[in-house]
Image (cartoon, rainbow, N blue to C red; front, side):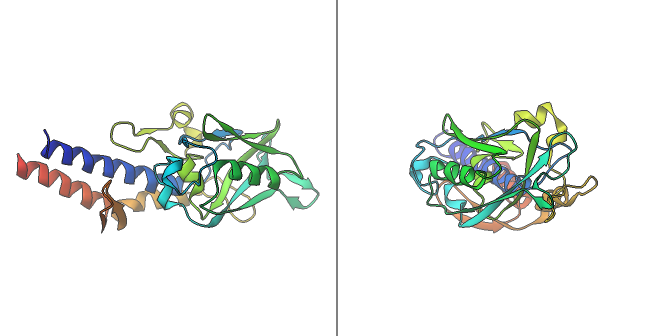
Length: 238
């Protein structure tokens, strides 16, 4: 109980956390058959004013965030076509991100980028990022090189960060059209039949990644390899 089972639980939690992060970081910058009209992050910060990459934020993957940018593409929710604020101009909100920003700063930057058209509003709800499009508008994530949307649980596949709470997001369970199989291209188009995101998710099975335990130990291997080694150890110990 005090040694073997504790180690087994730690290994399972590491596996579940790795699955959640690796799947979410791919899924968060794609689109399904339906665009989003709102999105409430599944991961809550402890303090709205704390740097997101610090332990004070309480985010499960605070150390994975990096400097980069993310792009929100806006659409006419009725036609599904990219939204134009003026004739010939597509609405793409590009937000540069620094991992030392707080959640309050992220909200401020999104609202500042959306100030011209006012088609989407960011806010904080119980320590979570909340995005709300105005009536008649929907949106998707076209790009996220920073990992911040995955870290906050926006447009992700999983919720939870350990073996005890890992689950598919409620919105996807209720509506399979929100599974992101394709990507949004540079023209803000998310085309039916595009399976680029689904392909990347399938390729995770054989992809070597960095797996970090709760103690900070890092290994480079596939998730199948990690889980296979775990099962082998349990069998040998038994």
